[in-house]
Length: 95
Length: 95
DNA sequence: TCGATAAATTCAAATTTTTCGATGAATTGC
DNA sequence: GCAATTCATCGAAAAATTTGAATTTATCGA
Image (cartoon, rainbow over all chains, first blue to last red):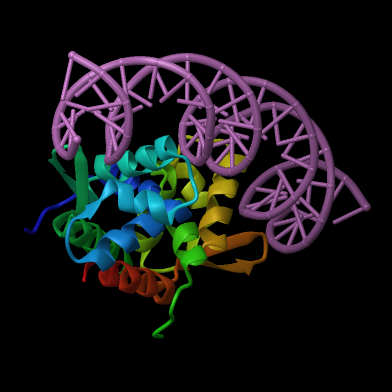
């Protein structure tokens, strides 16, 4: 809690959120309220598996999503701590 | 006040914030607490005038910055309403 | 009016991002 | 063990973004 982001992280997070498919993924993961398996995400989005995997990687690299591996499945959930820190940065931009 | 952003706007705003120079511009405009002339921004950033103009245009197109023209000068300031709406979207993503 | 200044626009190049097919790695069920 | 499943990675093509020189537009000051 109370994480502070450096400017490079802010850039990365913004970039990760700057794509319609990645926003859709974020909303889907959030709606789940639980872990969301990768294959479920694939079902919602009309893109190749490798492309979805790439988008997920960007969200994970930006720390917006956390992942947990369970056998051959990978499940995702929203990293609230980082999202909070991002929001905090934006609030400061507004002040 | 209480503006609600559609997903396309969220994407555009995120994209606009996903660049180090544009973040720097946002911070500079915010620090000013008043209008910031374009030529001042130019002085802070090691980029060609046309490039800075292009970055500013993206921030304005995303509604993150408002501009006012005064003679040959253009001054910018942060659009708090849109920033608030963006933050609201992110908060809902976290819930 | 004329030259200087501020900023936007145009155009082209260099770079980055997006996309997908193919392949690889790990795991599961039979 | 083996075929099927899940997901990641690689490589290349297509698309989008970034950048700056040159030009344009508009305004200011002398």
